[in-house]
Image (cartoon, rainbow, N blue to C red; front, top):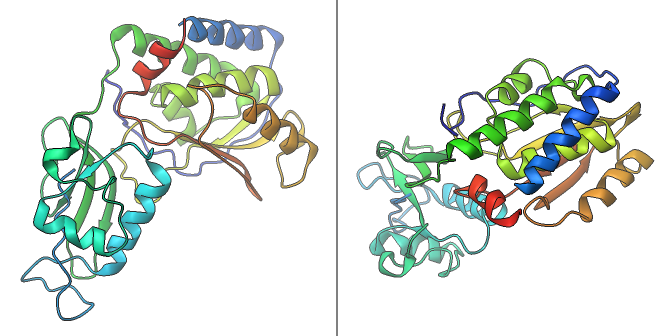
Length: 283
């Protein structure tokens, strides 16, 4: 088994149940263990705003979607590489030169953007966009980190503990994600604590916009209940949860927390090797 994503969770909803003390203790114990524990081809604008298939030039809307995605789903220090003559289109659309450096200045860990190209061996697709002319635009991590056997084992134990807790409420696609331990190690460590201490229920693991089904492990979760209380905007349960989340420290501090009518959406921005981050930041 690898750390690659095998199932797509979507926005699956699940029924609720109250956890037993034994299962909560199991989840808490495993959390304690955890505590120890792309070349995008963008041609310059042509004479019109539509795609010219002779030049495979994605329309401006695709560039805007891509700039929005990188701005909300990536840490600021992750560069994205495109060939020099194509990089100009992103910069003209408002892209930051620090985000889209010249290839020679990118260094290790850079993502790449591809147009109508197959995924390179070993790479993982992070987001895909289609322009009206038919070009397939894909953001990829060419060298994603792989968990060690020890890190994968830790992830599997935590995921099993979360799934075993009857209050988790995960079934269907959400349960499959947990059975596969296909969850970002940072999110999984946080989720295990939330299940054990706040009795939260998992409504699903919704992917980010444009994320393909074979993307990286889930790094977002939607929670819809805390015990018997609905996690709704302004509710005491939602306030209690968001206060708890704000007090967390890296690597388990979420990058994004949003209270919606469907529940509390918690997300981490993409990291190439989240298991290694958890290992390095915990005793």
